[in-house]
Length: 186
Ligand SMILES: Cc1cc2nc3c(=O)[nH]c(=O)nc-3n(C[C@H](O)[C@H](O)[C@H](O)COP(=O)(O)O)c2cc1C
Image 1 (cartoon, rainbow, N blue to C red):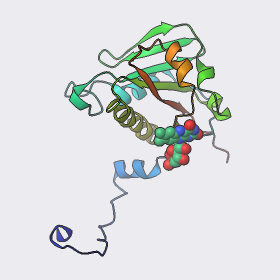
Image 2 (image 1 turned 135 degrees about the horizontal axis):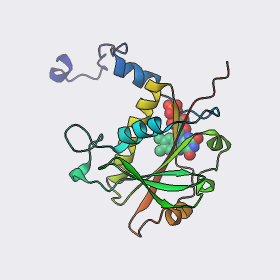
Image 3 (image 1 turned 180 degrees about the vertical axis):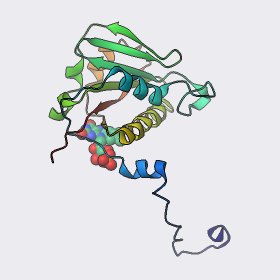
């Protein structure tokens, strides 16, 4: 490749990306959605989303690469009726609490109109946030492909969530991801 041989200060113009290719098109269309309509996600949507985030892949590892093959990323699903922990190994949701912890997430008005609330937590300060980023990006790409909307949010009450999710001392809340059907104004 020419730019590997030459040492020049001039920027090297790369060939245009093939954004008509399906995955590149999805990447090109990805956005954060901050307006949702009242349509709710169904169980199949939730299954697909959680699998995309941190399910078991064909190889038997996870849908995202993980440092040291660590599995300590946790994904919680929160709604008015309680809190569930996703088990990616068995693709199950396990209820851990009857508490409605949604108020810990609702620091922006639009949050209430979304349908599915996920909270990512971890215990490795170096790698867990990277794992959460890979997982939430998978969800962004899935949502884009399916006409769903999503947004990740750091503006949440992490202290209260830490308690509500029953995290250990060495665990920490990373980020919230909201998913739903976008509000199409036109
Ligand atoms: C780590 C992180 C934290 C974010 N926190 C918030 C947030 O608290 N509230 C919010 O409305 N959007 C939040 N966002 C979404 C950004 O506002 C959004 O990604 C940015 O404006 C770029 O828009 P786009 O995602 O549509 O390209 C966050 C995004 C990231 C990656």
